[in-house]
Length: 325
Image (tube, rainbow, N blue to C red):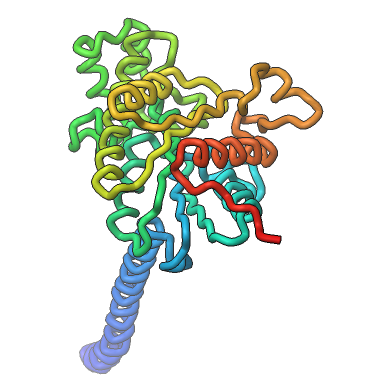
């Protein structure tokens, strides 16, 4: 027995010596793979940030007129095929009307953005852009009723925190904001939930236009963001136009009117696509609205025409010149 025991010992040691390098090699491979993935994510993230901040690489320095459209899904072109959002159709319309001068329209819309996020994106763009836009068309604020991320109306620590923290802050501040018992109940229900809200935006709205205190809070928040953007554009001598949605959003309308009264801001009213009868626009032979209440490609075309005309009439862009015979 002792002889057998002595004979096995070197075999075990040799086996251990073979396994250890393999284990170390696997561990090294995992660490290396993790570092590569992390590096790749950072590179991609920085690239995305650069693209989001200044997607003007294809704008010639001598381009005659550059328009920056900032907003949420209504600017991004939700429910329309690629290239048929209102900024794209605006660029086509302007260049068809004036073939002698170049018009470039940049789409800086991102679905789900609230007004604070949209303004932040616009300011980052202006800081990084090689060719400064001549005018900004801004359309965001509907998502303020459910998206409180980065909100200028909340303290920075809360605005950049979780949705639950944002709800708890609003709940704690509800008396100071004079919110009704209804919104307090909604906020308490959301704050006590174990999971984040994942429903569609129209189903996860926290605030609304049925209570004047809520409308007032949302209007003040929107105005803070608009005033910040107006200050930046005025400092850089860039024109600013505030674009409504095709349907009414009370807090946005109030904020727009306030900025127009206090700072002379230009408001482009495209409510109901410039038509007095909503039913004809949504149920007529050529509907302008998709099922989720976003404009469809025809609705965006109507908005593009109204925006082009308003920008010319208000002197924010040059009037198109007819081609010489």
